[in-house]
Amino acid sequence: MTSDRFSAGGGRRFPILSPLPILLLSLSPFLAIITILSFHRSGVNPLISLPGHFKSLPSLSFLGLRLQSDLPIPPETKRRRRMGRSSIAICLVGGARRFEITGPSIVKNLLLEYPNADLFLHSPLDKDAFKFLLLKSAPRIAGVRIFDPSLIPATESQIRVLSPRGSPNGIQGLLQYFNLVEGCLSLISAYESRHNFTYDWIVRTRVDGYWAGPLDPFAFRRAVYVVPPGSRFGGLNDRFGVGDRASSAAALSRLSLIPRLDAAGYKNLNSESAFKAQLTISKVRAQEMPQPFCVVSDRRYGFPPGRRGVPVASMETSAPLNGAKCRPCAPTFGSECLKLDGGWSSPEWTEGGIEICNATGAWEEGWESVFDGMAGDVAAIGRRQVMAAEQIGCEEDFERLRRRTEIWDAPPATEVCRLGLSESGSTSKLGL
Picture 1: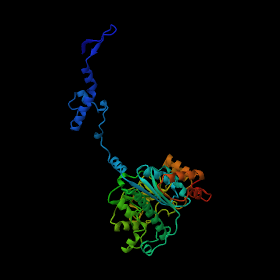
Picture 2 (picture 1 turned 90 degrees about the vertical axis):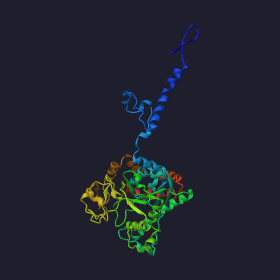
Picture 3 (picture 1 turned 180 degrees about the vertical axis):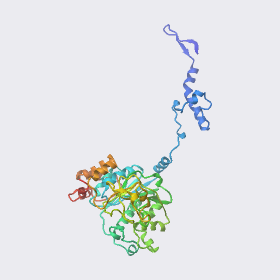
């Protein structure tokens, strides 16, 4: 529709459009969107009253509109988002003897999986400590303590409560391990005091743990302490745990709760049974949940394992290993052939799906190729980086680590690196 008016310029006359139709035409897409949104909010399908050829449209993409509220969010995604808003401490304890192969898996499946978490490391100084340079890629590092270990005199209550049976270094070995665990809790408490807050969650795992997959966000459960099944040895699996702040305080107080165990009449406990007892007296309920990690071990074990033996799994096993001992190997047979005491080790071993190594000797020749092929390129690069480390590069990486860490209690980088990279250091044992 045109107006009767014409422009008068240069002898040529052009029709002038009425402004009302132009205005309506320009506003029509916005009016359509508003109309559809009003239908959507009222629960009415905006396409029901449209002609048939519009009903066949699969979505509202013709308007460039995506109604996110119509898309169901998977429970795991909801849980992961919730954990992303929580304060989490990840407590890493133990010696670094095989960190060249466990470190990249910890970074990938714990630290990068929960990038809002603060890392705390508590480890003894030895020839392998330089391998912690792999932690330079961790998103957040709050506290590091690398200490020179010394003898811990056993008290009378510790001698009564603890048993040397099953511990490679007797009661002293248990005390050293308990000190590592509780020392990490002390690091966390110091950081909390500095910043006047408490963590919602604490994850405790081992330096020598290889993680084949990410930590499930449903492992974070209130009012219980989550541990893996299996490897109970008369108590509870103490190779990994996650809980809220109160539950974790009870679970990680491995040394300070021994007097209470003594007063309650507990005697001759191994690590696992002492762990179960301390949760019991603290009124903390344990809950088992499968976890995709294993403890990489150089130790030698009888083969095939007896009813109360220690099976060593192949790291290539796809089933969750729940902290079982493992190594890279060409497996000998499947776990369905084993006859283990379920109350002592794990009934899961006899259900199949787990491949067993012959661990009567040292790691087999060519284990590096087995590991690299199984773990992937990133893990292989990390392993080779440690194997090829030199003094100057090691010191630079440790300095970067120190500058990123708020609480740092460790020897100078020169000492840590020299101890590991000297001729008597650990690189000769890494397959070089």
